[in-house]
Image (cartoon, rainbow, N blue to C red; front, side, top):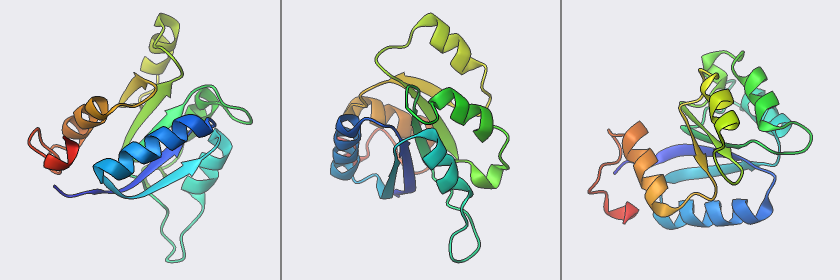
Length: 146
């Protein structure tokens, strides 16, 4: 199993961030997990150059929809206009508590979204996402995911 380089988690819920960070660390699936508390902070992170002149490009981005300052929908409106070099390789929107029909339809309208899931992320869901979007790095037999 080859770890992901970076996961970006954009969510204003400290409780959810605590749970998700703990799960990611326990599963040892990424070298780095970056947390930003709202969509504006997430966009700033993605568009601020690193010391070498490149931009941070997460392998995986998890996005909450309901946040202050800039919600997930507003983030996505701006994010989809960014050059690919500023976007994550895989973007998943986390819809707060459940995936309602209106939210699902709206999420489906964003071509930059690779999927949408309900919070909180549990181990089996993380495993499924990893083997779906990163089959060259994770497979059903990946011991770290069990």
